Image (cartoon, rainbow, N blue to C red; front, top):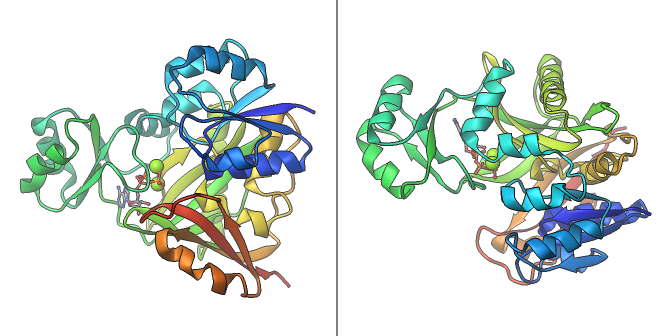
Length: 350
Ligand code: ATP
Ligand code: MG
Ligand code: MG
């Protein structure tokens, strides 16, 4: 069988490797950090830095196709790999999603609605954007942010200087605050043949910028469900995308507003592991391996709860609960704010 190369050895890489294994495929994980969760389940692990061109070349030659579990792979590493093997999803998806400014520009040009946003280069541009959008507003670093890191909420224009200081000169965008009634996300997939399939949208609850819970079905009208599918399909088609993508959306009285896209499997899609015959991880592996997409029809209602830090203390109780499917990532150390696992609380549709 084919071998799938996976850049990144975290929990997403781990669950991709498990899905590939179930399809009889081999996996080879590339990860700079020690003790990666994916290393415990992959067929092979290369521990090397993204600046190690020789290691990247050897890795690429040992696999048939390369995919990834995170979007911040350095461009130089992608160049080395792409000269040897296909990268799926492709470079355009990475270019667009690595930078919040290019992401918002791209989505706006597609005709989708985003929060009002502005490129922030100095105090003057921040003050001008605050005057235009009002407060509250959110200053975000353009690159490398996740779980709400690299973000400052500004509630008063007088805080502009302090907010810039907190980001320590990193390139940033200001976003106007979206007054949403709910946050949902849609996990879409596009195959090598151009076929598109979407999972049912889930409703997300964040605390301190971190996803805590996803519930399917989302409590939204059918029309918004359709809007979410069409919007995801539009992005997937425009990018000539191959693989699974997560699209985070705000629900507002004027319709759906796109928050951000992730060119990979997504935390808010973990419910699919116990809610569908084919989950997001298998769907992604199918797509990047050139297989037909699988059946992502939802057969159960699911509440997915992330187990973060001390939430791990709940595992003994959850292990006994009926309808609870545990997914633990095998991380050696529990730390505050660290995603250690998740549980899917499943109620089959009758
Ligand atoms: P992720 O881990 O999902 O990649 P992130 O660090 O990229 O997170 P965002 O998704 O940009 O962060 O923001 C985190 C959360 O903060 C959002 O899910 C939402 O609850 C809130 N938020 C972000 N931007 C806005 C906005 N413009 N208006 C209102 N709320 C927002
Ligand atoms: Mg993000
Ligand atoms: Mg987000």
